[in-house]
Amino acid sequence: MNAAADTIAAVATPPGAGGVGIVRVSGANAGAIAATFLGASPTPRHAHYRAFRDAAGDVLDRGLLLWFPAPHSFTGEDVLELHAHGSPVMLRLLLARTIELGARAARPGEFSERAFLNGKLDLAQAEAIADLIASGSEAAARAALRSLDGEFSTRVHALTAATIRLRSHIEAAIDFPDEDIDFLAAPELVGDLEALRAQLAEVLAGARRGVRLADGLHVVIVGAPNVGKSSLLNAIARSDRAIVTEIAGTTRDVLRETIDLDGIALTLVDTAGLRESGDAVEREGIRRARAELERADLAIVVVDAATNDDAAMPGELAPGTARIVVHNKIDLADAPVNPAPEASRLPALPRDRTNTGGNGFRRDAFQPARARTELRDGVPHIWLSARTRDGLERLVTELERHAGTGEPGDGAFSARARHVAALERAQAHLDGAAHALTTLRAGELAAEELRDVQRALDEITGQFTPDDLLGAIFSSFCIGK
Image (cartoon, rainbow, N blue to C red; front, top):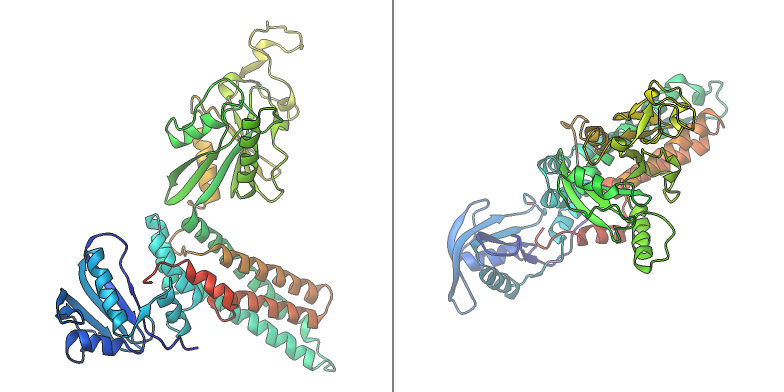
């Protein structure tokens, strides 16, 4: 595909004053514009020091002119760069002069879009440019650079190639139904299919980590009133960001705090306690809390360890929402010594009871509750005290596990939510192909599922991408890139 025939221009450096600013031009008229500024034909990839003049011949500024003829340029077209002093006024004058000479103002992301359309990079690499510019940590920047260098694309292309091989095998078997050999029952075919499923699952896990590196992790703290949600936010953030009182319903609005968790931005959101309330302000806070839950990557559900109230877990959480249950206030709770499995459900003995209290338990059979971690139905349960910070490191470790900071980072690459969605669709169709092949013995259905797998993968790199999606992607870029 060829980009539009017109010539585009934009300021390629960030807004504001700086030592150096760059005006970039790309398209068929870039050479003529360069010759006008230089007064002669420019030498490719050579820095020319010249005075940049306006239409009347007056000097606008002095700087460097660089010329990159097609196809050896970022966009694959003729590209001109004017390096001048980084005055916003001066850069606007230079940009206006290039427009007078035959260019037009570029749309956001149009340079990268032309690079994609001219085959200089695929869509995943183009998106990595924006991720690199917007990276908020060293880990995110390195991951974006790996994607820009093609690491993510290489893995997707390998998945596509394996999918095409499987399709070819199955479709060949369909074309020769009368052969005595059942090609669909070949062990190597089933083995290749399972290998592809494992390979795709690995890439999907890497893409999810890439999204977390780029976008961070959105963690919402929820629970009933007065269980210590705000105290927990303060403890994790190591600052008194949230107001803490013994009055239930103190928190009326959402409060956000962003912390750096080993290179990943972790946005903690403290919310109003979930309960039925007659107070209009508190009801609005509860509504906002539920809205935050709908877009949470992870929910920290806080319950009161002093009452062993597991029933306080809010029912608003969607079944697929990742969660950690925190049993807070262990400094106020008692626990049975060496409890039997069912003992953890028993109420703790109140502190003012005698050794032979009304519930029949001996006082010396109890001790202060201790920090610990249990896994129940795949959900981590952590006992801690936000006030004393006892056990808080267990929660931080669990947050790191969800964020993926403990995973090997040498091969980390940046990714976007749309990449994860495409890989999840590919995974679903691949599971369908496995079912059609091994259970239904339906080669036609398996081949159709594999075609859908290939289409989903092609959306990532741009082999198959609707035009409206391209517009949405590149419109999010900065102007000049």
